[in-house]
Amino acid sequence: MTIKILALSDVETGLIYSERSDEYFPAVDLIVSCGDLPMSYLDYAATTLNAPLYFVLGNHNSLIPVSKTSNYPYNSSGYNLHCSNYFYEKRLLIAGVEGSVKYNNGPQQYSQSEMWTNVFSLVPALLRNKLLHGRYLDLFVSHAPPWQIHDQQDLPHNGIRAFRWLDKVFKPKIHLHGHIHVYRSDTVRETVYYNTKVINCYGYREIFFDEPTDNLPKES
Image (cartoon, rainbow, N blue to C red; front, side, top):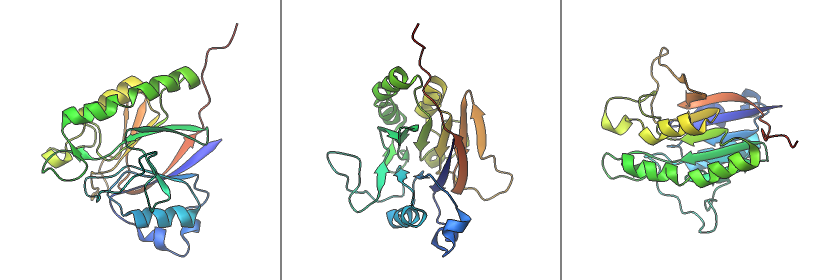
Protein backbone atom coordinates (compact mmCIF):
# COMPACT_ATOMS: atom_id res chain seq x y z
CA MET A 1 0.00 0.00 0.00
CA THR A 2 1.13 3.56 -0.75
CA ILE A 3 0.39 6.53 1.51
CA LYS A 4 0.01 9.86 -0.27
CA ILE A 5 1.20 12.87 1.73
CA LEU A 6 0.52 16.48 0.76
CA ALA A 7 3.22 18.56 2.46
CA LEU A 8 2.63 22.31 2.80
CA SER A 9 5.02 24.98 4.05
CA ASP A 10 5.78 28.72 4.24
CA VAL A 11 3.62 30.08 1.43
CA GLU A 12 -0.02 29.52 0.50
CA THR A 13 -0.88 28.11 -2.90
CA GLY A 14 -3.99 29.12 -4.82
CA LEU A 15 -4.55 25.50 -5.82
CA ILE A 16 -5.75 24.76 -2.29
CA TYR A 17 -8.41 27.46 -2.53
CA SER A 18 -9.50 26.37 -6.00
CA GLU A 19 -12.95 24.85 -6.44
CA ARG A 20 -11.09 21.98 -8.10
CA SER A 21 -8.58 21.43 -5.30
CA ASP A 22 -9.68 17.82 -4.91
CA GLU A 23 -8.86 17.31 -8.58
CA TYR A 24 -5.46 18.96 -8.27
CA PHE A 25 -4.71 16.87 -5.17
CA PRO A 26 -6.70 13.63 -5.47
CA ALA A 27 -6.68 10.81 -2.92
CA VAL A 28 -4.56 12.53 -0.28
CA ASP A 29 -4.15 10.31 2.80
CA LEU A 30 -2.73 12.96 5.11
CA ILE A 31 -1.63 16.58 5.09
CA VAL A 32 1.61 17.62 6.78
CA SER A 33 2.54 21.24 7.42
CA CYS A 34 6.15 22.24 8.03
CA GLY A 35 5.22 25.63 9.44
CA ASP A 36 4.69 29.33 8.77
CA LEU A 37 1.18 28.85 7.40
CA PRO A 38 -2.10 30.17 8.86
CA MET A 39 -4.14 27.55 10.68
CA SER A 40 -7.19 28.73 8.71
CA TYR A 41 -5.41 27.71 5.48
CA LEU A 42 -4.41 24.34 6.88
CA ASP A 43 -7.88 23.67 8.27
CA TYR A 44 -9.39 24.57 4.91
CA ALA A 45 -7.04 22.16 3.14
CA ALA A 46 -7.82 19.37 5.60
CA THR A 47 -11.57 19.92 5.29
CA THR A 48 -11.63 20.29 1.51
CA LEU A 49 -9.37 17.32 0.84
CA ASN A 50 -10.92 15.27 3.66
CA ALA A 51 -7.54 14.31 5.10
CA PRO A 52 -6.10 14.40 8.64
CA LEU A 53 -3.66 17.23 9.39
CA TYR A 54 -0.35 17.03 11.26
CA PHE A 55 1.76 20.14 11.69
CA VAL A 56 4.65 21.93 13.36
CA LEU A 57 4.78 25.67 13.84
CA GLY A 58 7.32 27.88 12.12
CA ASN A 59 9.16 30.89 13.48
CA HIS A 60 6.61 33.24 11.87
CA ASN A 61 3.54 31.50 13.30
CA SER A 62 1.69 33.20 16.13
CA LEU A 63 1.41 31.13 19.27
CA ILE A 64 -1.54 28.72 19.17
CA PRO A 65 -3.26 27.70 22.43
CA VAL A 66 -2.95 23.95 22.93
CA SER A 67 -4.92 21.68 25.23
CA LYS A 68 -3.04 20.68 28.38
CA THR A 69 -4.07 17.06 27.90
CA SER A 70 -3.03 16.64 24.27
CA ASN A 71 -1.35 18.38 21.37
CA TYR A 72 -4.70 19.10 19.75
CA PRO A 73 -4.90 22.88 19.26
CA TYR A 74 -8.11 24.71 20.00
CA ASN A 75 -10.01 25.86 16.89
CA SER A 76 -8.07 23.51 14.63
CA SER A 77 -8.61 20.13 13.05
CA GLY A 78 -4.92 19.21 13.21
CA TYR A 79 -2.38 17.58 15.51
CA ASN A 80 0.65 19.49 16.74
CA LEU A 81 3.71 17.27 16.27
CA HIS A 82 6.09 19.37 18.36
CA CYS A 83 8.09 17.04 20.64
CA SER A 84 5.43 14.38 20.10
CA ASN A 85 5.17 10.96 18.50
CA TYR A 86 2.06 9.72 16.64
CA PHE A 87 1.15 6.43 15.00
CA TYR A 88 -0.99 7.52 12.06
CA GLU A 89 -3.79 4.98 11.61
CA LYS A 90 -1.38 2.28 12.80
CA ARG A 91 0.47 2.75 9.51
CA LEU A 92 3.06 5.49 9.94
CA LEU A 93 5.26 6.55 12.86
CA ILE A 94 5.46 10.37 12.85
CA ALA A 95 7.29 12.82 15.10
CA GLY A 96 8.23 16.47 14.82
CA VAL A 97 9.95 19.56 16.22
CA GLU A 98 8.80 23.12 15.57
CA GLY A 99 10.64 26.38 14.96
CA SER A 100 14.03 27.66 13.86
CA VAL A 101 17.33 28.65 15.37
CA LYS A 102 17.12 31.63 17.74
CA TYR A 103 18.01 34.95 16.11
CA ASN A 104 15.77 37.68 17.63
CA ASN A 105 13.87 35.97 20.48
CA GLY A 106 10.68 35.68 18.43
CA PRO A 107 8.15 32.85 18.77
CA GLN A 108 9.23 29.26 18.13
CA GLN A 109 12.95 30.12 18.12
CA TYR A 110 15.45 27.93 19.94
CA SER A 111 19.17 27.88 20.50
CA GLN A 112 21.04 24.86 19.17
CA SER A 113 21.20 23.59 22.78
CA GLU A 114 17.45 23.96 23.20
CA MET A 115 16.90 22.08 19.96
CA TRP A 116 18.99 19.24 21.34
CA THR A 117 16.63 19.20 24.34
CA ASN A 118 13.61 19.09 22.02
CA VAL A 119 15.07 16.18 20.08
CA PHE A 120 16.15 14.29 23.19
CA SER A 121 12.56 14.55 24.50
CA LEU A 122 11.54 12.30 21.58
CA VAL A 123 14.06 9.57 22.32
CA PRO A 124 11.97 7.51 24.82
CA ALA A 125 9.09 7.30 22.32
CA LEU A 126 11.46 6.41 19.47
CA LEU A 127 13.01 3.62 21.53
CA ARG A 128 9.52 2.36 22.36
CA ASN A 129 8.69 2.40 18.64
CA LYS A 130 11.73 0.24 17.97
CA LEU A 131 10.65 -2.22 20.64
CA LEU A 132 7.03 -2.41 19.45
CA HIS A 133 7.44 -2.05 15.68
CA GLY A 134 11.04 -2.89 14.89
CA ARG A 135 11.79 0.65 13.64
CA TYR A 136 12.27 4.01 15.32
CA LEU A 137 10.49 6.43 13.01
CA ASP A 138 9.05 6.66 9.51
CA LEU A 139 8.46 10.39 9.09
CA PHE A 140 10.18 13.29 10.87
CA VAL A 141 8.68 16.78 10.41
CA SER A 142 10.43 20.04 11.25
CA HIS A 143 10.29 23.66 10.22
CA ALA A 144 14.04 24.25 9.97
CA PRO A 145 16.29 21.93 7.96
CA PRO A 146 19.12 19.83 9.39
CA TRP A 147 22.55 21.40 9.78
CA GLN A 148 24.30 21.81 6.39
CA ILE A 149 21.45 20.20 4.46
CA HIS A 150 19.44 22.76 2.48
CA ASP A 151 20.25 25.48 5.04
CA GLN A 152 21.82 28.88 4.45
CA GLN A 153 24.72 30.92 5.80
CA ASP A 154 22.71 33.64 7.59
CA LEU A 155 21.84 32.90 11.22
CA PRO A 156 18.01 32.82 10.85
CA HIS A 157 18.33 30.10 8.21
CA ASN A 158 21.03 27.97 9.81
CA GLY A 159 20.14 24.29 10.02
CA ILE A 160 19.71 22.39 13.28
CA ARG A 161 22.56 20.15 14.44
CA ALA A 162 20.25 17.90 16.49
CA PHE A 163 18.11 17.12 13.43
CA ARG A 164 21.14 15.87 11.55
CA TRP A 165 21.94 13.57 14.49
CA LEU A 166 18.35 12.33 14.69
CA ASP A 167 18.31 11.46 10.98
CA LYS A 168 21.60 9.57 11.27
CA VAL A 169 20.77 7.66 14.45
CA PHE A 170 17.03 6.99 14.21
CA LYS A 171 16.82 6.67 10.42
CA PRO A 172 13.40 8.05 9.50
CA LYS A 173 12.63 7.19 5.90
CA ILE A 174 11.68 10.80 5.14
CA HIS A 175 12.43 14.13 6.85
CA LEU A 176 10.14 16.95 5.72
CA HIS A 177 11.09 20.58 6.44
CA GLY A 178 10.30 24.12 5.32
CA HIS A 179 11.83 27.49 6.30
CA ILE A 180 14.15 27.72 3.28
CA HIS A 181 12.34 29.61 0.53
CA VAL A 182 12.86 28.40 -3.02
CA TYR A 183 13.09 30.97 -5.81
CA ARG A 184 15.27 29.17 -8.38
CA SER A 185 14.41 26.03 -10.34
CA ASP A 186 17.91 24.62 -9.76
CA THR A 187 17.65 24.80 -5.97
CA VAL A 188 18.37 21.42 -4.38
CA ARG A 189 15.21 20.33 -2.58
CA GLU A 190 15.89 16.64 -1.94
CA THR A 191 18.98 15.13 -0.33
CA VAL A 192 19.61 11.59 0.87
CA TYR A 193 21.45 11.58 4.17
CA TYR A 194 22.36 8.04 5.30
CA ASN A 195 18.95 6.26 5.17
CA THR A 196 16.82 9.41 5.19
CA LYS A 197 15.47 11.44 2.28
CA VAL A 198 15.40 15.08 3.39
CA ILE A 199 12.82 17.16 1.45
CA ASN A 200 12.29 20.91 1.42
CA CYS A 201 8.50 21.35 1.24
CA TYR A 202 8.36 25.09 0.46
CA GLY A 203 4.97 25.77 -1.13
CA TYR A 204 3.76 22.21 -1.52
CA ARG A 205 5.11 18.78 -2.32
CA GLU A 206 3.29 15.53 -3.04
CA ILE A 207 5.07 12.57 -1.52
CA PHE A 208 4.27 8.90 -2.01
CA PHE A 209 5.29 6.76 0.94
CA ASP A 210 5.37 2.97 0.71
CA GLU A 211 3.52 1.79 3.78
CA PRO A 212 6.06 0.25 6.17
CA THR A 213 5.49 -2.98 8.02
CA ASP A 214 6.60 -3.95 11.49
CA ASN A 215 10.08 -5.42 11.41
CA LEU A 216 10.23 -7.53 14.54
CA PRO A 217 12.31 -10.67 15.09
CA LYS A 218 10.36 -13.82 14.33
CA GLU A 219 9.65 -16.14 17.22
CA SER A 220 11.64 -19.33 17.05
